[in-house]
Amino acid sequence: MEQTFIPEMKNDPFQEEITSLQHQLQQMTLERDAALRKVEMLSASIEELLVKRQQAELTAFDALEKLKLSKSMLHQLKQDKKMTLYYTGLSSFDLLSDIFDALHPALHHDPRFKISLKEQFILTLMKLRLNLGNKDLAYRFDIHRTTVKRYIEKFIDVMYVRLPPALLLWPDSKAYKLTMPLSFRKHYPNCIAILDCFEINCEMHSNIIDKASCYSKYKSHHTAKYMVSMTPQGSINFCSKGFGGRSTDVEVVRQSGFVKYVKEGDQVMEDHGFLIGEEIEALGATLVTPAFKGLRPQLEGSETEFSRIISNERIHIERGIGNLRKKYTILRGPIKIPEMNIDFNRNAFIDKIVVVCCCLMNAMPSIVPPSVVFNYM
Image (cartoon, rainbow, N blue to C red; front, top):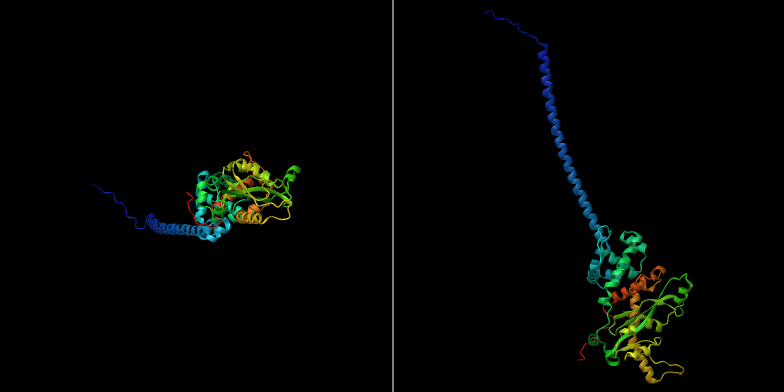
């Protein structure tokens, strides 16, 4: 059988081109693999840098939060007892926390609040204690001025409802006798209350009738008048609503509702201006007042001694009111007109403030030094 002869091509140009292309493909594959390895290395480096940046941001955020916490009023008060006393009027941060815990069930927390409820409470105490302006408090707590006003109104309303049942109490007859100061045990063992009034300057009303009713001849200024009753132990047991400065002490006592708390056998101590002897005696109680000279040239010796004893005992109420207004400077005034407007319960905002300040005052140690206690039974 005859075989076909295929001639061998010594110099095939296509083969050379194929070999060249294969070589180029191999070279590009190596370059691609190297590039991919480089991309992977760069990706790992980028991820590592991102992790480091995130850690640095978290560290910076933690440091900033710690700095804010160290500068926050809440943290500073917690660390400094004297600072707590100066800014809030309360003797310790523990007492502040106890009062806040008593208010907390009546409060609603909103996550939109820029500051915590406890900081809002501290803000309110600072307003009562130092009478700082709303703009000042806004800068201190980094909030808006109108927000400061809302926080103060909210906490005053809550304190006005929850504090008096616990801190503004009419004393039990047995309890107050067991803690009666020695001087009262000797001279007035049944004294249940010492009465006095104080006035707070207020802005001038545009209404002519309100303007006339608030003008006080005693202060030569427009004022709001409050009557306060204090026990011999130094705690406030009654605080009236506000009256115009023109009102007399007698009118304030009669309209305040104080008389309904007096019982048979009680002794009520007051100054010359409280001419309520008939009301007190009608209840079987006794009104203790200093001797009045009247048209006589002078008092008799026994009357002078009697008046001296009463003056020595009445000094407690004068010191108490002075300390109340010194501790909570908002009670020095002046009262703004909107704070004197009454709500639907016929309570003025300044009336709530006065009651709250009296309650906070009772939470502090008494101004009357402790004495020996014994049982009369």
